[in-house]
Length: 306
Image (cartoon, rainbow, N blue to C red; front, side, top):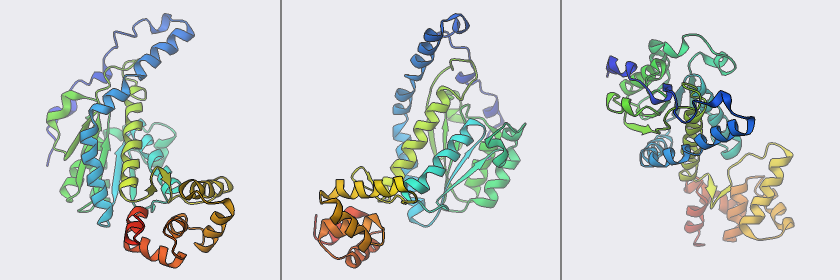
């Protein structure tokens, strides 16, 4: 699949001047901030309009991970940094295996701290990276405000050729019909407060989309119970305290009982939770969780609790 060349020449609304902010440099500090905030408030509605497409992307990702494949994020500049941040937080929050989410940032690790000239324009570099990394059954999510970043489009092209499903988060409605992608997640944030500064509304939209996407994937994979983080790794004192609070919140039993249950479960919050809610020993709780891919509710149902 080859992306038509006209895709890279489409004018993006994010590059246009915003008629609501032309007096930006004449405002008081407070009014300047109010102007930025007024534009920021438009972003959640733009994201809301893209939720059906985002749901399809979540389902692709869940299917990939359940089948032993991976999710890839691809971005340049702000988009790549947002993707790196999102993936990094999944390990401590949900104890997601580190191989589940892979980030491909134009320019590599160096570009996380400073711009790497021409990295985002390297179509072949993006294609080569995903040709090497992506596999059939993976899901690859690209992020580019303009919908035209060559590194991202090259990566998606190569991923499709490898048999991966692909999605694209972008803020340029004019690019919609030009991209051969499985899921197009168009978040039309319009012109930026400062023309072309896509770290602003377009970047905020990408943050909201990524957070919603990865959280939904984790929930669908049983990494929560209700709205509680029951798969997190208690790697420090704060998280160990949170683990105990979550167990108390979910079960309603005393702190002492929760402490004993966690000890019996060797610190595994899910095992302790099923142990207490189902009234079975920790070993049986662990077996039920293993049989249900770690879903607490499914384990409880299997044990006859719900």
